[in-house]
Length: 143
Image 1: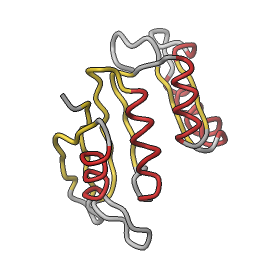
Image 2: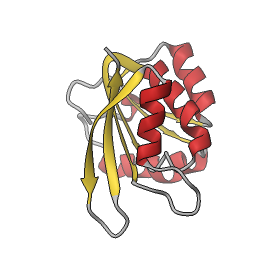
Image 3: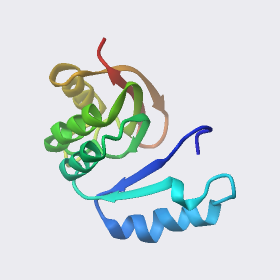
Image 4: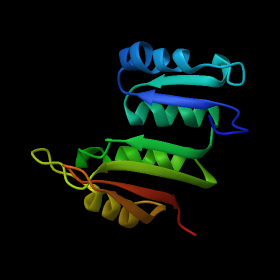
């Protein structure tokens, strides 16, 4: 856990993933320095998650997401979630495939959507050379 972090929120569409995998991993790695009370688990669609976070008035310094941009129809939901939950100086790192074969979507399409249709901007990206190329983009608020 990031030093000085007050809490960490884990999110997945399926509550069973959070319960059976995420929580299990946390329990395996829990230490006295990071008690379980510092973790929160939120399940559901990104629209539901954005509403829950807005109700709590929670803003995040860091958001990490992986393999969540494979469906172009969900870009507006993800962008809205990032807009409503990133602190003014917060940063999101989104990891995904350069292109998702068979389902559409990919990093360029997601970057274009963020830059053109939201109050956010994709600043940089890193390429991970693998059998299926992946990238990580850094997203923050437009100045």
